[in-house]
Amino acid sequence: MSFLSSNTAASTTNTSASNGQELINDITINNPPEDSISDIAFSPQQDLLVAASWDKKVRIYEIDPNTGNNQGRAMFEHEAPVFSARWSIDGTKVISGGADKQVKLFDIASQQTQQIGAHDAPVRAVRFVECGPTNTQVVVSGSWDKTLKYWDMRAPQPVSTVNLPERVYCMDSSQKLLVVGCAERQISIIDLNNPQQIFKNSMSPLKWQTRSISCYPQGNGFAVGSIEGRCAIQYIDESEQSKFGFSFRCHRKTPTGANTTSALRTSANSESHIYSVNSIAFHPVYGTFSTAGSDGTFCFWDKDAKQRLKTFPAVNCTIPATCFNKNGTIFAYAMSYDWSQGHTGNKPDYPNQIKLHATKDEEIKQKKKR
Image (cartoon, rainbow, N blue to C red; front, side):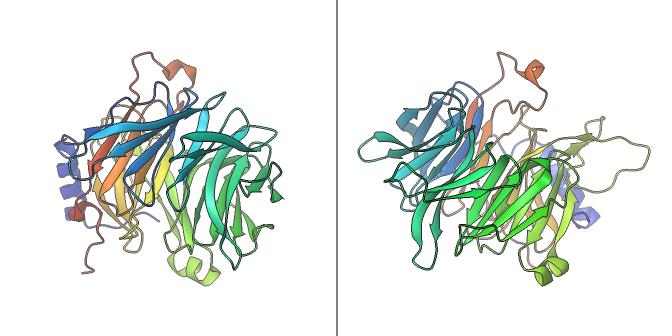
C-alpha cells in the first residue's frame, strides 16, 4: 500500500520541494567527524548531540536551540570505526559500540571513558533501556556475533545474553519495546518486562535486506526500512497490525530526475532508481516520522493518516543518519558516504557534515483530518 494523498497535495509538496529554499538556513555543525558518520543522537534532557564515526571517534556537540550556534563539548575514542552512540536516560552519559567489539561508557561530567562490555564480533547498535517492573537501567548491545547483551555498567560480565537468529544490522527501543533487525530479514521483538527472552521472531514484511528500524514513542510498534526503498509500519498487537499495518514505497527516483518519493506508482514501462532507507526517526511530540536515504533526501510522514507531509530537496550526497531533539524543534541529518555504491563511491571530496534543520509545524505536525 502506498501513502495516500490528493494529487493537489502531492504536486504542492513537489513544487515546494523543488525550489530548494527549505534547507537554505540549515545550520552546519562545526568541527564535524573526519570520516563517514554512522550514528547521531540528541540527549533526551538537553540540546547536546552525539555523533559516531568511522574515524574511530565519538564527538559530543553543544547546540544553542535559539540560534543554532554550536561547539564541540567532548570527544572520546575507540580502536576501530564506531557504529553506534546513544545517551543515558538522564543525559549524563554516552554509550558507544563499534568494530573493535567494545561497548564503552563516557561520563559527561568527569570526561572519563570506561569499557563496560565486549562481544566476539563488531558491535552494531547500543541503547540504554529500562528493564522489568522496577525499571532497572541497563545498556543493551547488539552484535554481528548474533547476540544481544545487557550490561549493568559495573560488572565486566553481561547481566544476560540473548541468542539471536542472525547478525544485528539495526536496533531501537521505546518504553518497554526493543526491536532488533537482523541479517536475512529476521526481526526479533523483545518485551523489556522480560528482557532475557525473545517475545517474537518474525520475518520482515519487506522483501529485501533490513536497513533501519525505529520504535514508535508509545512503544506499541515500529517502522522498518529496507535497501529497496520501502518502509513498513508494524504493530506488536496482531489486531492493531491487521487494522493499521501497511508498507509503502519511498526514496525512489525516475531517471529523468522527477522524484517519486511520494510512493505514487509509476507506469509499468518506466524504470525507477531505488535507494536504501538509511534512517527513520519519530517526532517525540507529534508521533509523525522522517525517512532518509541514499538518494540524499529526507521526507516527513504521518503514518496514521497514511500521508506524506513534506519532501525536502536532495542534498547531493547520501544521508546515513538522522534524529530529532528532545522536543522535536530541531531535525539533525548527517551528510556523508553510506557505502551504498561500494568502495568506488568513496571519493576523497565526499562531504562529512551534520546539518540542523529547524522544524516548522506545517512540515511535521499531523494534518487535521478532512
